[in-house]
Length: 90
Length: 199
Image 1 (cartoon, chains in turn blue, purple):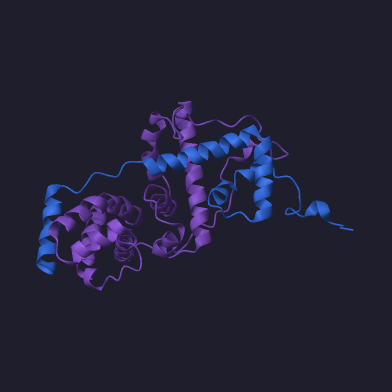
Image 2 (cartoon, chains in turn yellow, blue):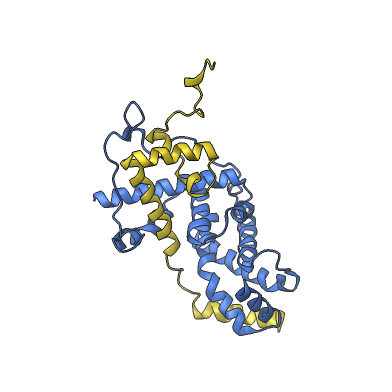
C-alpha cells in the first residue's frame, strides 16, 4: 500500500498546463523520460490550449530554421581574406 | 558531408575559389554569432577577422574529426572569449543564469495550473508549418533582444542548426544548461511575437 501516492509528482498524476509549457523544449528534443513523455502526451491529447502552445513552438522553431543567412561579406572583406589565404596557403 | 570533404580537399590544395565560397557561406553567420559574445560591431569585426586567419592557419592541421562548420565556429568562440576578456568583460556565460522561474507568465494560469483563458496564438501561414510572413520578419529582432547566453544558444541551435552536443562544447556549458537556455530563449521569443500580434 502506498502512503504517499498523491505527493509524488512522477506518479501517474496528470500534468497541468503550467507544467506542460515548461516541458515543451525537452519534449521536442526527445529528452523527456518515458513516463514524463507519456504524461505530456496524455495532457496534449486533452488540452487544446497546450496543443496550440506546442504547435506555435514547432512553427517558431521551424521559422527560425528557415531564416535566411545574413548578407555575405562585402567585396573589400572578401578580397582581404583571399589575399591572406593566398599569402599563407598559396 | 561529402560536399564538405570535397571543400576541405580543395582548401588544402590552396584553391582560392573554394576559400571564397567558404567565406560567403559562413562570414555572415560568424558576424551574427560574434555579436552574441562581444559588445560592439567593431569588436565583432575583429573577432571574425581573427577567426578567418585562424581558419587559414589551422587548415593544414585540421583532421576533420568535427565538421568544418563546427570547427570554424569553435575558432570563433575561442577568439570571442579571448576578446571579451580583453575588453574587461566577464568571461561569457561563466555565470549561467540561475533564474529558474517560469517561462510563461504565471498569471496566464488559474489556481489549478490550467490556462486561465485560451492562450494567444501566433499567426501562421496556412499553407506551411511556419509562422506568418509578418511574424517571421520580427524573428531576428526578437532574438536580438535576448540576454547574451540565450541569444548565443538559440542562434547556434535554431538559426545555424548546430547540434546540441556541439553547442554545449562550443560555449563550454553542460548539455542541460544548453537546453535550459534554449527553452528560455524560445519562450521569450514567443512572448515577444505574441505582443507583436496584439499590436
